[in-house]
Image (cartoon, rainbow, N blue to C red; front, side, top):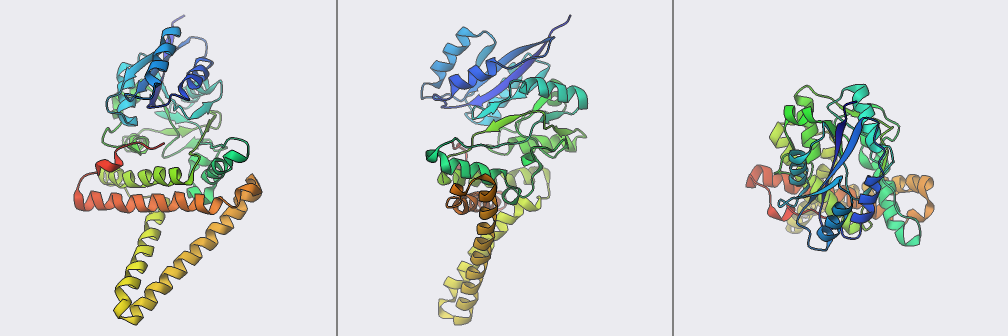
Length: 351
């Protein structure tokens, strides 16, 4: 019987405390009969001891190989792995996600069943247990809420069918031959851009509830804010590249922040003109009040489902998601339309 290879590709950088547990979990993946496993780890020139631990693991398990990623970002790491991959099917994994033992097998089965150009599972977030991890659990609960995520299908754990984009992804090699690799100019949103290219080229992206994984999100509100500021920043560059109309959920945070800034500007500029001051102040109070009322209502609903101990943290967590994305998207549009190039300050990944 002919044997085929499935290649797992993993971008990583400075993951000393997590890399060995991650490699051990990937090594236990169940691969269907007739398939062999290859694992390529694209290290972004780590300087915290990750490379040494990764090299030691590769020595003890010949299925694993370390690939240098001098670009140090996800898109360059994925492309270096794809270039080196021997598999006819390629599955992406990330270090801060835990995978069901049949994750790779289900990716293969979904591709064989649907013939899609990219397949993946829903994006399920979870926080650690215990009082010390209450903020991370609040971050995960807000992440999973459709009221916070804007109804994104990727957060629907039961959905099965075609989608615009999918968490992580798994592809037959032919997908990259047909649509190309990941855009190395993008620090974030490179997966959304690649999926958009697939759709525009007549391909299909498919989400299956049988492909199960659990993502461990950031554990502080400040980290969530920085992460989503980057997501918001890079989205306009994707839109400009493809002339893509934005989905409403991508526009609302930026429009809200812009409205607040306009109201603030009216308040300040109207110091010598009372009507403008009153208009700006009323707009600021009205917008802020409506938003906080909505956030408190959403927080109450999430806490009722996920734990009342999360309630004190949820308003700030939700605001970190929305305001981070909104501020990032406004800055992104400025750099797209005015500067004409990205700011290097947004070129470093945050964790």
